[in-house]
Image 1 (cartoon, rainbow, N blue to C red):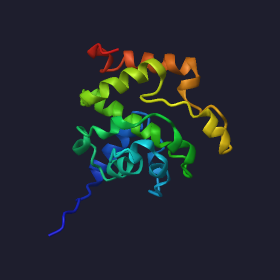
Image 2: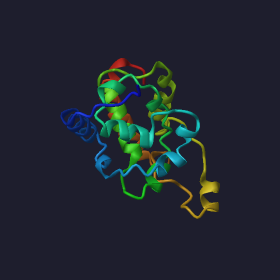
Image 3: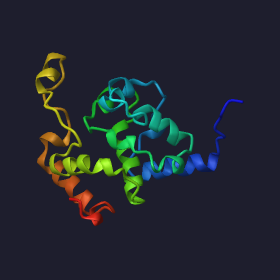
Image 4: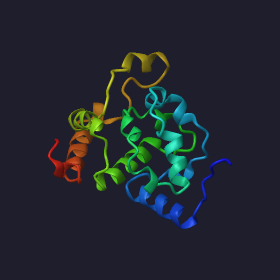
Length: 171
């Protein structure tokens, strides 16, 4: 007998609303094309529940079932998924909304502490300077991320300081 997921419209509505309330407002635009996953360094590194699959699980109402999912903390906040998404979903915002949901329940991986400290300090969980590569492929040298925006870094720090994670004293 094959396994299947029984879809529950109330759970789906609650999951989507939760993610939208935490900042993943474009989630309903997703058509599951996979463009985001095709370019995601986290997916390429083997983190299974990022981008398309994370969005699919939320759209299937599996929010509670994923609360302990640690691979979502593998997102490097590079914003490539958002740049490539043809539907304007802004997958990185969905991933971060899911992290906020997890952090609100203090359900984050202990292996995520280093990446969270990096996020606090630099605006990225993991950062590589890709300006030269971006120029070679015709993109603006600096990605539209907090790595190049001091105000955005300060906003991230304020958000983290005032979140349940900030109460843990890891920053």
